[in-house]
Length: 352
Length: 75
Image 1 (cartoon, rainbow over the protein chains, first blue to last red):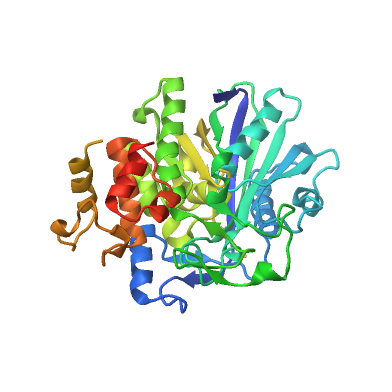
Image 2 (cartoon, one colour; image 1 turned 120 degrees about the vertical axis):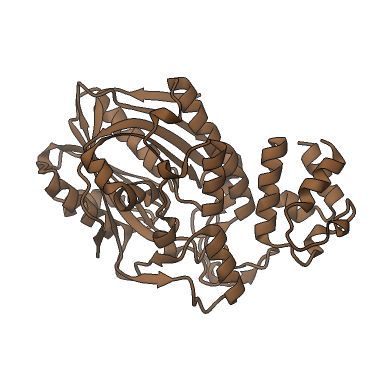
């Protein structure tokens, strides 16, 4: 049971960046109007930000990081660790994008930098990873970059995913702080569900071939190619409504806290129907559970920080907030964090 | 798991379909109103009432409501 407590770590600021390009789901030429209407009302996504060929996840993250470093007046030499959590790196599979970003941001060469290729659970995992390095006090500041250009992975004709995934990148700066209570975590994995969200071809298990790009229609009537995203919506839904409430409850019971000890519960933005089910199972009131889904869709590992920036910015800057953060998805992998955020710095949403 | 209770809860996930058409031997995916959204409602109902997980494979491989019931009951 992975219940963890990283002491002496505090979160100083969060920023997020999205592409300027807005794509509305209404009017999508691949699907019938009825299907689009049902999708918007059930899944809750009206529009997405799409990066197109020119923009990579690293570009979104670098823009978010530069703004945050500037507003926090951080000396770049103080950043001892940089972690890039993403499933859309600049290059398949080498070098790590984090190394390229170390240079782009002109961080010290004494920086530890590496990629962590997790998706929807990635923000919580990234926080835990950096907090673990900082807890001992040997590294003073850490930069967590998360995000994906997830809109590029589905087949455009795949109704299950092409209107769901949007692009975003986010940056978070954590700092060693002897006075801080730190961050509490519960983390978990169930690889038996690895096929629920998968790109079957293009890795080393099934190498890329000419057939990888050929469209086919599956038993559920969804158009895919082996090199595109394969999402089993039923498996993912079943997993989400069961495990997300469980991980939250497990951490809350461990810490002996109730919903009264939570100012905001920020969930990975998976889909409105699933997230509402999770919220109701936890008896959390609507005003404590913000959504960025409507305007940005499911933005993979960036969805939690993006929601913090777009929906909670003023509160985060002006108050102390006790936050429960819960990410769940591809892997299957999931985790929950609980921490107090004291008047953190949150720049306005950046668009490039 | 009680079969009648399951059948009633199953039928409640449909808005327009006459509940009398929803019997244990009904081929649920052939019901006009059946859609992926109804499927998600069924998954949620089973999670809530029985604390069990239906997978995509359960929905694909079961044809009748009886077959789905048996797959869930065996979990």
